Length: 325
Image (tube, rainbow, N blue to C red):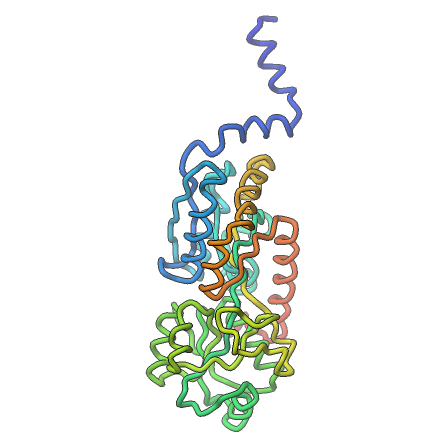
């Protein structure tokens, strides 16, 4: 047997872990695409750019953000699920296309549970219950009472019919025993314009795009769904404080990779992002955005995804939402 043949056979016999370690040795060897399945300027997009830029020095590579909106965030997510599992294409997303969309028609062209692998949560994004000032309510109880007095007459915006905000609204309606009319929007920005113009009554919104409006009194925040008060808006009570602990939740923004991405590459990425835990400047910037820097690793992230998938699936089934628009 020739020397070349011997070396070839020896390479084939390498343990899988060692082979993966060698594969990750020169990783990354080109810019890493981060697919964000929403338009530029959205909260998810901002979170991706902030965390990716901070992680670059720790990875020794370049991240490039690519916005791929469409099909209720399925388009960009599918692109990543079907991309080469070499660590050079990642997804940064909210829960919608990972744990909600699968319960609604049409059938998805990929299986998020089987074809995507959780990497790390970048941020937890608290949600506020927002109303227009002229609605005349100052508390959650007053809002619920008004909705009960006027069944189906209050308009409640939802960003996308098949996302976590719609699920949160359906849960709120059920637990509060009220009826409101949901109004779908392609973006939070469109809904905010209608709130400011008295064309929309209420909506669940993340903090960055409405923080200044709340501080100026142009919009009213009745509560946060976060487990604790949010540093960026400390005077806003939690739903739990107001006697509605069942409404406690927050939205994660996280990184995922194609399912067959090697462990060695995954570990290198996780280490780069988790190094940001000691980045005080980044922490402060995220707090000012109204979010929380978490950098939760793959195991805990995977557990959270499983919990969310079961929770949202139950809401869809109990409300028979898949047959509604």
